Length: 243
Image (tube, rainbow, N blue to C red; front, side, top):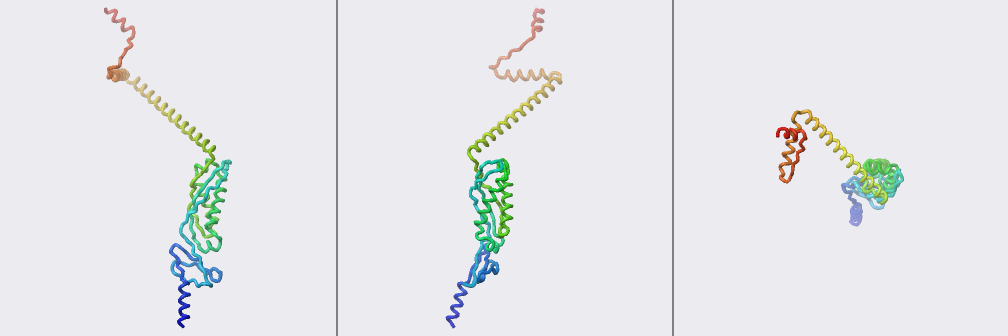
């Protein structure tokens, strides 16, 4: 009797399985799926039953560099990171052999397909839109696996050296263009202000003389400056007549 009781206690002891809060268990009986196991201590009878635990926390998958050809035939190497989580542990075990590997492979092929639909300028200028499109495609494909893709981030876009030089020259030309435009706009504004000031001086009686006296005063503040006045000949002749 004690021997039988000891055997039963031993079997119960080795049948205890712990499912953590961040896990879900997929329980099988005689090879058939029976139920999903919630967190806590659960009994899994050896030989007759088995259980696989699935981590339902958000995971990050680093997608290695993928070489893709853009729509305008430019070769580019792109890598990304994907954040996903398991929302249905049963599907993640029953519908796909290795969901982590499957998500990684699907992401690689999807990246190449999406990049092939974009021109290089679109890819560089709208990376977030490209990443969003990749996420939507992967999320739809992994829905049957019980997986929710939360975010896709494009990390690096590497271009050939000759293309990098072309882009650098284009950026430099664009900067020079903006500099010339800004300088021209400044000259136009200065010319307009000078013309407005000239009109104001000509319209106000005595304003030009006051401006001239103000300028002479500014120049005479430095003793090293020499001021020469151009006097009309008619004024000099008037002095000769008086003498």
